[in-house]
Amino acid sequence: MKLYVPFRDRDLLDSFREVLREELNNIRPLLQLRLYEQQQKHACCFMIESWVEQEYTVEAYEGVPCAIAHAVGAYVTWKEERYIERLVRDHPAYERVQEKDGLLGYVLYHLAGKEAGRAVSRTSELTSNVERMVFDYLQQEHDLHLDGFFRFRLKERLYELRLMVDMYIEEYFAEEEYEMVVRRLRAFLAGQTVRTELLRIVHEGGTSFTYYNEEWERLDPSRTLAFPVEAELPYVLAEADVVRTLAAFAPGTLLLYTEQPRAPIILMITRLFTGRLILSGEYPLIRMAEDT
Image 1: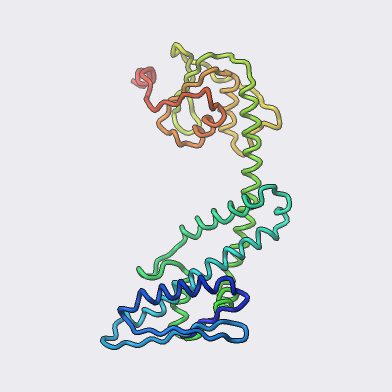
Image 2 (image 1 turned 60 degrees about the vertical axis):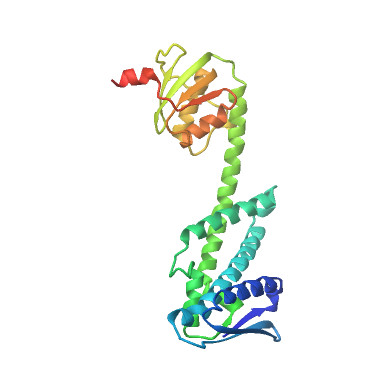
């Protein structure tokens, strides 16, 4: 079999060579192998010869295609990362962002997560769609031009990547805007005059809470406080209503009882009232009495 790596990917040659050799070494117990290189006009050609000295098994038959599939899978991963970096840098929003490495890291991180979640196992040997494609291709062909495989065989995949890059860039700016609003709102809440020294709230689930004073007398949560426009929380109306209610009580200390400390609303309250929030996982006796 012959694998062609174009000289335009010269910076990937050493890494590809190392991975290919490692993958071939893993199957040497099954086959006799010979790997050598030939420098051509526009590409480096990796030539692989293999033969079986004893029993010819399915494992031996699939050994070389599987090894090549793994190596090409690594090559595609490197190429995709470079492709994504170019998409991000060419995006109109790239010049507007201050933390450019932060934007690129955000997109790469989320795409890696999607790819990991999308991995499909063909056998115990092949762990991604790309590796399956390479393996199937090598059942019919013995020459593989890696750059052509990337640009033409993965057209749909590259198109999907472009859409996902656009989506994650939009998400990045939305999260940046949200973080800025949260910081403003936290400053606004911290600057309030304390009206309730100790406020107890019991999380009932979702965005539902029951409110009590220090003596465990139930409080009416109907009063809310409007926020300045620049501190209005976007996209989270139910959560914002809870925060407006808490702002109306203006607690000096907030004692929050919840069995769901990782719930989104609890995490938001924790961020906004940091320094004066006490979180408790114990179900208060007053609530147990009311439930009975």
